[in-house]
Length: 399
Ligand SMILES: Cc1cc2nc3c(=O)[nH]c(=O)nc-3n(C[C@H](O)[C@H](O)[C@H](O)COP(=O)(O)OP(=O)(O)OC[C@H]3O[C@@H](n4cnc5c(N)ncnc54)[C@H](O)[C@@H]3O)c2cc1C
Image (cartoon, rainbow, N blue to C red; front, side, top):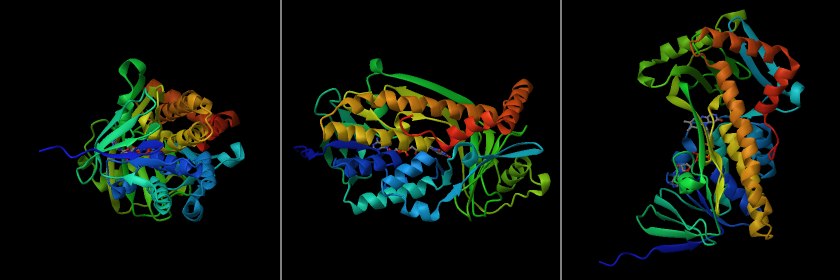
């Protein structure tokens, strides 16, 4: 039997991954007159339902507004002026508006993803969902391509001028950079987060980050009726060892239920999972005609709420850089992308590591005293508070 011919398709930019970085890149390129094809191994519904990030920094909101993607966000998101930092017997509010003039918005990654998909569907974006065997080719030549098997089992090839790896930490793009040309930087942490979603109104108006001798806890939210809460747990924790009652009890203790009359209201848990913590950077973020963006290039622990925001910042830089190249013939911004993006990546990597190290207990009493000293300084010194606020609410894209 003769094998079926490979179905050929041509585009200017082949984007691997239809998560937030891939779909936003497709949108920003289209607005600049650059056509793209997006390739995704999962289904549209699966990608849109992944419970992940929930805090959008100021630059992300500004970019989504400029891109015409913030209609629902502006109606439904909650704008927060700051966060609470706490440790036993003390809770302090850091007011980002007073400190830096910037805010953050609470709006789930699921909602960002739905808005992106709606906008790209309305514009007729070509997206291949549920593909397999994704492979990148000829990245060092002027005619790179991506091959894959589509959901009907047919072999396909997308020929492009540029390939962008937006395929997160498990995609093939990162490893398509030859070993001799890449360097990785990695740190794993000796703890994980047990995260829950609960159908209950948040017990706080803004996020609470709590240091506690039993371990870190955090009270976040997704809306006025859905709370998102986290507990520091040891690596290797089995989620089945944590009944809902045990989770709410630990949250009440660590978040200070009863302290100055504050109450934590429990409710039905609708999702429960354990999230390991990792910092990872791969350099360079460009090799030949392959560019890396979002989690494909870097991972941060979620304590600084930076993962999704960094992905947005990468493509916010990359889209105009690729348009300058492919529309105007000016390669310089694309050639500068890796270095420019990396400055922010390392800033956010440091901030995420710093927040993580300050708030998670290690069992070492000396470390605990240093953490408490640092927390007191951040909460009581304008310089300390401004440093946290500036990083948390987000530095401008291109910083
Ligand atoms: C469990 C979890 C919880 C998180 N919680 C938070 C949080 O609380 N706060 C925060 O700020 N950040 C959080 N993050 C990080 C944040 O969600 C990511 O930084 C963000 O999703 C990055 O977007 P991305 O588009 O770069 O990557 P992704 O969202 O990972 O998208 C990559 C896409 O590529 C696709 N793909 C993979 N392999 C292939 C292939 N071979 N072919 C085609 N497509 C492929 C994937 O299916 C996926 O849809 C969390 C991440 C995880 C994994």
